[in-house]
Amino acid sequence: MAIIIQKVSSKSELKRFIRFNYELYKDNPYSVPDLYDDMLNTFNPKKNAAFEFCEAEYFLAYRDKRLVGRVAAIINHRANDTWKAKEVRFGWIDFVDDLEVSAALLKAVEEWGKKRGMTAIVGPLGFTDMDAEGMLIEGFDQLSTMATIYNYPYYPQHMERLGYEKATDWVEFKLKVPDQLPERFRRVAEIILQKYKLKIVKLTRQEIKEKNYGQRIFELINESYAPLYGFSKMTQGQIDQYVKTYLPLLDLRMVTAVETEEGELVAIGISMASMSEALQKAKGRLLPFGWFHLLKSLYWKRPKTLDLLLVGVKPEYQSKGVNALLFYDLVPVYQQMGFEYGESNPELEDNKKVQSQWSAFEPVLHKRRRAFRKDI
Image (cartoon, rainbow, N blue to C red; front, side):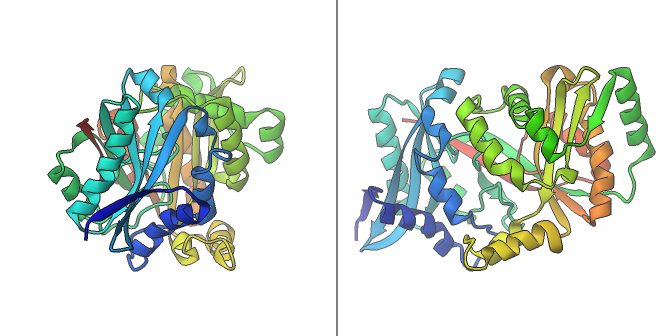
């Protein structure tokens, strides 16, 4: 039977779009499902502030009335303007191991993009850098994280057969929490504090509210992430959304800020207990019992692994070793909380500044993911 591509045009079809990933990976021990309600909000123009500068369409693939694939087509006009590009993105792509299916899905995105003046297709990418990005090409036997994509090994094989080429790669490291910080690391951190007259700050809920730290954190991320592949500066609407959605979930012991004597924020490190196993147990649902697994991982019976969600350093401080100050403060916290390993989450393969900070943590490169590109 021929492949039929259908645009998502109703709430029930959007639900099928989201649930297809759960069904395709329900027996996979390494895949970590997204929370269903988060996905509904992500794809809803009224709930996702990225729609201020993005447009999107979602497609489902059927063979003989059976759902066999999905993909999102996205144009981030802000990113295209920033990078002087005319690219349509494909994201949230999943398909059975059938080249006709993957070809039909990507063709739908290509045609949708061409009608809107785009000259290239790239992905997998989300609306912005705050969404999961990059197709896994190494590390299929490693547990995924809540911030990344997991996919079967046949996915990148399809991409290559369909004429897609590498745009960029991200690497991920498994890091060992040391029993104690090396004396050299500690000494360097203390020298940096004195040399640049910096101070380490631990935030409280009250300070975040009164001193507007949420706004300041995301303004710093905008500045420090600006040179990274495909990044588009977050709007005020996005910042407001992220502050409201994510900051209340953080255990502030695992958040460290660095400031100047005058109180200027120059670095931020945000980490949290890994939610991977909890999300697997929740199966993408908060109700009826998914919330229990998530809260258990956060507060009652933490896993041995933590996720390094965000590390941002003001550009003029990036070559001054300021990153070391974050872990000078955080490593004792990780030890006290019983963590043994950390997940770096994706870093651009050529971002040597970031990768150099892991030397004290016995880094093991255990996953690699890729954005693919093709002219259309």
